[in-house]
Image 1 (cartoon, helix red, strand yellow):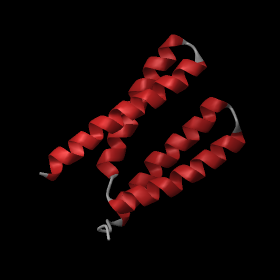
Image 2 (cartoon, helix red, strand yellow; image 1 turned 30 degrees about the horizontal axis):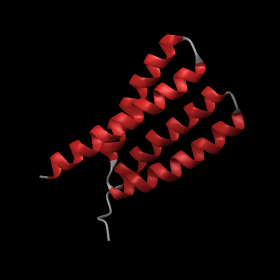
Image 3 (cartoon, helix red, strand yellow; image 1 turned 120 degrees about the horizontal axis):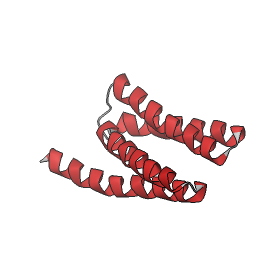
Length: 104
């Protein structure tokens, strides 16, 4: 059974991933997708925050922001979406390695 963390980590996770979901819907240009992705982000973020992965989520969000910035500079919406996802994936790999390093 994983250790349960405090409400602060749960709320941080809900905020980070919920905001990411809202931004995905915004880029796609659909209010319905914003609501669905935001709700799913809140649920998943709360669960990950409950498990204690808030530092990991912050690293992934920074990767998404860097990727989205680089994709935005190209001026193409499709490249923006792909670059944001790629930035999040790369940051996820780096975050996983950092989590292993900090646990030692």
